[in-house]
Length: 187
Image 1: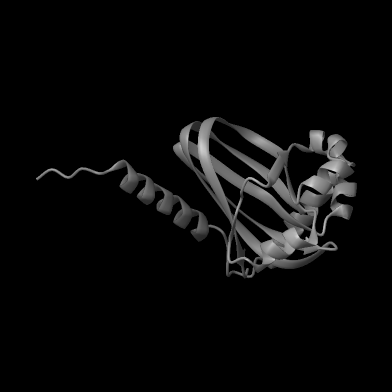
Image 2: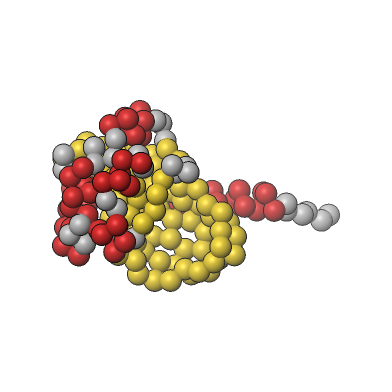
């Protein structure tokens, strides 16, 4: 008897396995809030000291979701996982996990940090009200060397959410389709 696996079934199983493995090693539910807060502090301090212009961006934001360590790997099918904290007025109000899945021509692994700057109270409220939030087309990505200098008042007035990706190490190359979901957690 011959059994064939469809591409959709293979992708579903592979994606589910990746997310389960990431969740098992995440430390969620193990009292990890102090560790997340310490990593967020270090990430924020690194960003501000390396790219001083980002301090003004954070000061204008209604809230910032800090994801201090994202780990991503892919070989045709890829994924990433990380945990972080949402801060309003530099005070942690919630903790979040991020899961990313991708499919396409890709190979490699990398780690990086990112921060989502919610530039309007409405964008922040929409994020917090949601059960989970997938990145959509209203998000602007920038690297901090661009962000510190070129994300000025005009850009922040036009963009409700700005994402900065920084501190990359490793290498991943390719062209993929991907989605990212942010989910509130209780560490």
